[in-house]
Image 1 (cartoon, rainbow, N blue to C red):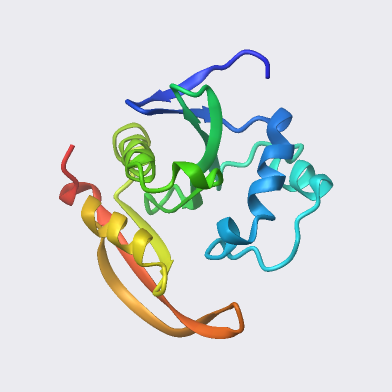
Image 2 (cartoon, one colour):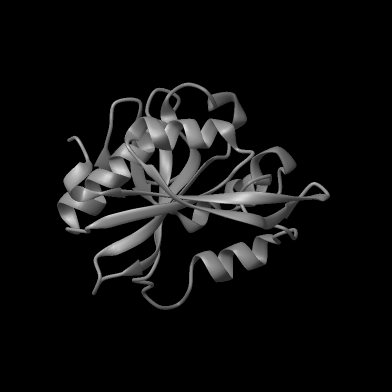
Length: 180
């Protein structure tokens, strides 16, 4: 898999810059119906599209994605990132998914979000981070609220998942309200 360069170090996981050599792994994750259920990936993604769109020929300052790398098992298991970054207003949206389902429920998502928030608030000096979470995604809502995100909005019938309209909750956290 080549040399591993850690960008942000955690306890169970490290965050590494996404790697085009892992495109087949990303392809597997986003096309897994269980993983993509709440990812807003409504159509199949080809390996070619992932390589082209996830690794553009230019520097993308509006989106920063990291691999979630499991330290003990030495494999990538998911992604976490800041998207729709606004450097003027010092805010962004956070996104996360654990693509390897056997790692769900082990605190890895919480650790990845906290590492990303540390980077956003302490390194990039952002003021606010937001996240949109499907109202039916109770596990993600629980994680974000545990970390300190608060609900700012509830949008009715925003997503069509598995044949039904579902609501979307917008949550946020401010640098001044974050512990750590």
